[in-house]
Image (cartoon, rainbow over all chains, first blue to last red; front, side, top):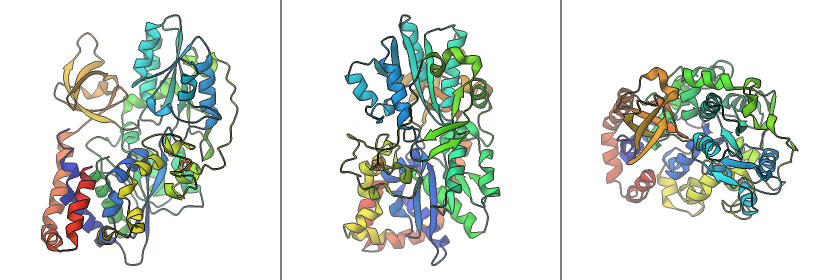
Amino acid sequence: MRYVDEYRDADKARALAARIAQLCEPGRQYKFMEVCGGHTHTIYKHGIEDYLPEAITLVHGPGCPVCVIPMGRVDDAIHLAEQSSVIMASFGDMMRVPGGSRSFLDAKAAGCDIRMVYSPLDALKLARQNPDRRVVFMAIGFETTAPSTAMTVLRAARDGLTNFSVFSNHVTIIPAIKAILDSPDLRLDGFLGPGHVSTVIGCTPYDFIAAQHAKPLVVAGFEPLDILQSIYQLMVQLSEGRSEIENQYSRVVAWAGNAKALSVLTEVFELRPQFEWRGLGFISHSALQVREKYAAFDAERLFELPGVRVADPKACQCGEVLKGVLKPWECKVFGTACTPETPIGTCMVSPEGACAAYYNFGRFSRERLQQAGSPLAVISR
Amino acid sequence: MCLGIPGQVLELMTEHPDLARVDVSGVRRVINIGLLDEENIQIGDWILIHVGFALSKIDETEAKAALQFLEDIGDAYADELMALQSSAILDEQQAEVPDAVRG
Ligand code: SF4
């Protein structure tokens, strides 16, 4: 949109950075988690860390939906794709995600009918065009994406389609944030809240972070200045001894979220008792399954699935990366055995994954500059 | 895939009230606006699009307010920035970092 360039203005970025630096208490270290993979992407792409004082560290959170899909679910999806009657429809991001032995891309090369789609509605169209086949939509994503899947299921129900179903791997953000707050490994000073998830759920579900954990959260937009401004708001709160939920991204996110999106979401989906997150393990009530009422569109009810749990590969440290305990380059296989072309872990697959973002844009990062002895690493504080 | 992209509504499809034609950086596409029933979407409105659905209406007033905030900060620090810019060691930063920011 027409504002985009203004949200990337380097002078404004420096002015904000100067303000942020002024708010740092001498000797204090600050650690903020950006929950959403979209933020991770912007942070690396635009070298945001180079603008920040040394006292502030950004750690990457679990908010990349592709990154958290466990291997067993990928295997189940490939099992579905192997049925000769099935056309598997998936977002492009899923194609390289490794399962226990194969990815969608491998399965496709081996003859499975797997199609890349931009929208669940494209999958619905495939079902209409192929009445003799069964189209399964590989549904992934947080609350940003789940309402779109729900709308598509409602549409399929209204049109009486009998050859469309979804394999739901939708996850919910709040339990993941809870899991991170409860994990002893990490001491955080505040959160950059996920901008687009919040368009749906609004800002009130984050209240517990301020109320029970006494930490501030600022819902942030995705432009470089959005992120800097959100960090500034976090710093202001900390300097005033406040911990509140604030909305920096109010041009897009309504405080109450999107009621219609939430209502279609609860019409079609319900919480699963348990769901495994790659790297984070089982988290209760953290994922969505299709309600009984829409059983005719639920691939898990229509097909037999192996449902075998596969342990993450030993070399993979995605769990630590997803919890923000490790930086991507601290993983032993980063950039060597694990690259975007040959990912071992999921964080390397999606452009929103911390490892892929760092691999693609890491040349701007403070640590690299430091290692290279660049003067920029010093003066940009 | 979690990212949304802003688009502007060009046309409302009268026969399909849940569809609209939008312009996304010059690309025209039909998308579903059924999740914004209560927003009474009009031609010219800006919306955030994600996987073929409009998720939220973008509030221009709020966008302007946010920019105003940034402008104000800019003013307050203009002098400091001038000093920053006249400093020799910062030439490199001037040369390098803005590019990084503009991507
Ligand atoms: S480098 Fe690869 S294996 Fe290591 S944490 Fe990142 S994605 Fe996982």
